[in-house]
Length: 490
Image (cartoon, rainbow, N blue to C red; front, top):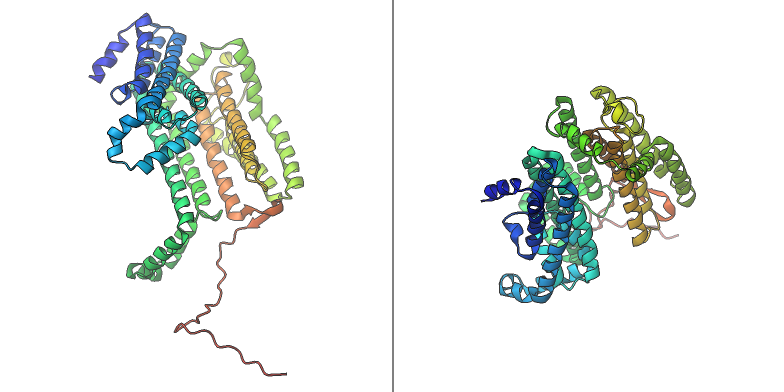
């Protein structure tokens, strides 16, 4: 049925196709159609029709945005008016009321992010608007994140369908995988938060349970046979020390980014998979250049250039040295930048990929293309700078931290987009720069975490991995206290 409906949409022309692109996202969360036919498929097909000149691209994007925003608004209104009674008649018979109340309180307080990220996966996209209304989330908050999420989601899928053309099925599978990845990250993050809070609330009970487990025969056998391995695993998963769970997370991020970079490099060398999208993305960008956007991209690309990054790091180093007296942090800044330059220059020489034709370039660029040097050094330098500024002592306030992270993220994304727009890099060049820069940044952060954490006054406090052996007050054997040395009277 879905295949027939898809072929029917691809056979439409003009305003009939635009109406379908509007109607499916509209009904997705307001009438739960998304469980049967995801709205992103209809938008992708609208982009495909636009690439075939059967319908204007701007009309498809506008219809998708309007349908997504209006559909979620209807879902919010339904949840606010009838959601509680509907839920009590279905899931309320299985789920305890206190869990429902807790979910409602969370959405009412911090549900904006759930509305935004839930937009990018089918199950959450259908359920979140109604749950937000049921939780009495302030409509201004819901509307803001609903509009932002709808804009990003609709434009992203429209452009993907337009660029992919007849290969839209591969893109549909990719977007589904991205949605599942978002869900996995959200679930993992929520699980870690819940686990850490539970550990803090039930410290005594957890310690007692740990002692009972440690006294069991399998645990005693493991301690005798694998003492170093168990100690290493315990230290790597400890969330209270910099060299514990934070270090493990940084190393996993580095490994994952390096794996992505290796896959992209293989595609570029073999000219397959993602590398096949490069000409289509390039053609799309060439056909949609405008004067005002060119001005913005020409300015944005300088934020990732050496002429801007070097003075920025110099000023940041002076601030860190004067305000925190943290020589190591300043050194890490320059190591992140210098190491990224060495890495991308080495891989450029090994891959030897040519840049797009010079006639398509707005700015002149020489040398090899893969990976993008601007993007690699931008994510390494700006990313580490944001980390150091948001983890200093005393830590910045919530608004300041959000502003720093939002600025760094915007710069990183704009630099990557500008390199493609200005015609100096292919699409996969930018993806390679992101993955290589992220891998190097994660390694720098991992090394920083092994050194320690920033303590009062900004001085680097070295994290002691070694345990200081103290004498057992009960004695080494028999549980008896050690003998008290005799002291002769004066």
